[in-house]
Length: 384
Image (cartoon, rainbow, N blue to C red; front, side, top):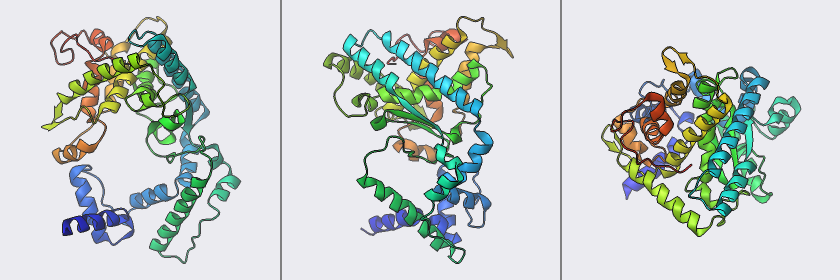
């Protein structure tokens, strides 16, 4: 009983650890340094990084303003849009070639892929002084407030804004995550993918990268998010974001048979002795595989038959896959992996391995020998 009570108390404290005494901050920091951040700085209230994190958490639109003004250019936005256009085009082409889908379902999938909307970088109003000031106008803070009182006031402001939205019609133009977050995501109820300003930086993208680097990195990210619209969760939502049955029974059965292949495949993987749960990670694994396949298809469309050159002994086709793998260059501890068993993403090395063993294009690019680690057999899992 007391263990449960202590757990609840700790969760409440942990949510506000940055606002308490250093002793509490230190306990929280020690825990997460052990399982996730082996070399992270001390989380001290006097630490500039800690203060920056708090401002980003509680006033994300205000702190995003100088960031986007410095880093998000018109050329970059153009590159993001053009890449997304090419990814959508390639995905539609791939759908049209799927013989396991009947014509009705295939047409529905094409309509949904073409109907996907996007949000890029940040909401426009944050670059307009008057509109940004109006957004924060009701925030009640002053220099006379203590640090804790300021945080409480900001939290109250954010909660009030959220609660006020509950009685209003759904706004599919709203931004659900702060612009500075290093993330891209697909949201099925809106049939929308979002590329936040924080991810529009190397190693994900620059406006001047050649196709093999651009599509091997940001193209894969875009393809990953688009594929989420057609994974085991996204497949349940139609082009308008409604959770309805929009596939035929025959195509649903084919889909389920093919997704089981991914479950069985990833169940065989482990990292540092920690086994991967193929069922838990199914949606992300489908998106990883679909992202690589679609991005490579888009890359080849953009190349349009141009001669493949070499750089440093590697062909452009090979460097596409190197660019993809570089995104997931990571270090893990055993403790961190055990905590990660609740994560719907496979550990990063497995995300790369699992996707590439299913890629015939990877096998051809590197001339992998059949029976090798990266080409174990011809029985590959394939969906999108």
